[in-house]
Image (cartoon, rainbow, N blue to C red; front, top):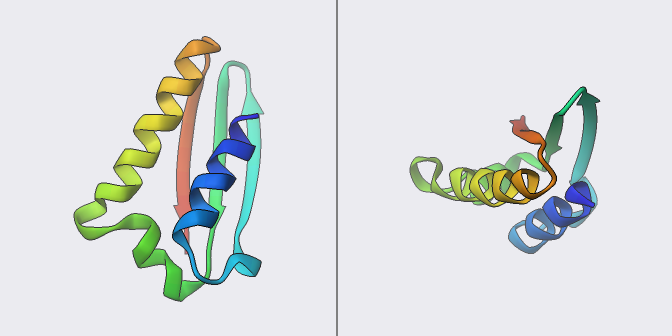
Length: 77
């Protein structure tokens, strides 16, 4: 569920939707989501001074808190 929500957010930010891939690893109560986007879209996802990336992480952490989990969102270039 969290992966799908993150994917929806990312797909609305990028232009090259074909290049978006999100992989997830779960270890105990920690869920790690790795986001890969096209090189040209990386700036759109991270934003000026990382503001968009920080906002995405905040949204995902609040969703994870409801499920008593910890989520880590990593942007991989």
